[in-house]
Image (cartoon, rainbow, N blue to C red; front, side, top):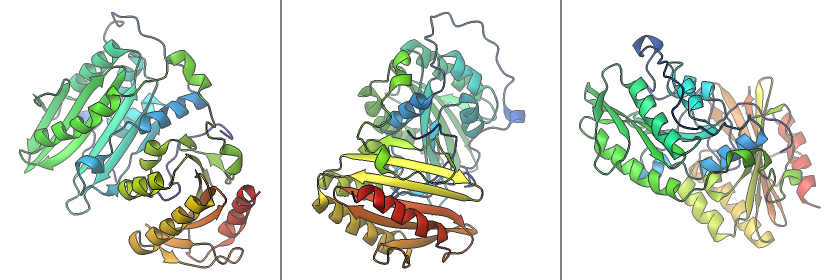
Length: 392
């Protein structure tokens, strides 16, 4: 990885916009006044393996966890809108503030050897209901089980009642009022803790969370978390793509680094079509560099394939998706007039995305936070620089 990375949320390649100012799920966490007083349990009665100090390796482990965090759209296809907060979490306090909001979940996670985590959030544009899934890596299986129960006990306030889902080995909380169910589930699987916050129609929440966890648990059962003492030495560039990926301006975010195919799909707008497209064309690796500088944010994504034949196929398909499916407006970049380039509205600003390919590599460059869609100054510098890196 080119440099130490800092927290942030952007997009990569053919991915969705995930902005830190996006609207979170309604009532995703109780307020401090609704929460029980922080618990002060005695020292854990088991040996907890200390978590490694946060390093680039910690972020790389969170990218590995992305691959086994359930895609919400798999269980609920109508929940297509990406919502905040999604992505990597190496700081338990930041995760607590985003997901639980009461200042007590972070200490619980730390007490049980929290290493890192990944979260996904999607909502239904028609009714606004959403689902948040999070997977955290802890010290050992017993620690994960203890953390699950303590977190559930901590969250059991503000009208929640303990509930059961047939076949689900974990703690479940249900709040039903106003024609809506709100369900929280805490399910340990080995060293991993799966968490879900789910909103549904009245009487439907428990069954739906059961289906969600039926998708989530098998992913974790096949996952081998990295031993704590090996996390700092995880490979930063397993596919040899780092030097071929342009360094964008500013400070890198936690999304920067390598991903396997499943990890990349957690960033994608349409993970199902993109999985089919990339798999059919021999996808061999992906590297992302995302950064923030002043009012602008940047994302550079590099995809690797066996040859130029597959690269050209994906290049054309991505351009068609941006134009026909994702709502992009095409524009011409002066420095590379034949590059597929598109701009999109994002709240009160705009972002641009352009593609360039050569040989076995395909790259995209995004510039976000623009005041006008035709402000191409940054893109006109960055895309040619990225092309120069991959054209040999």
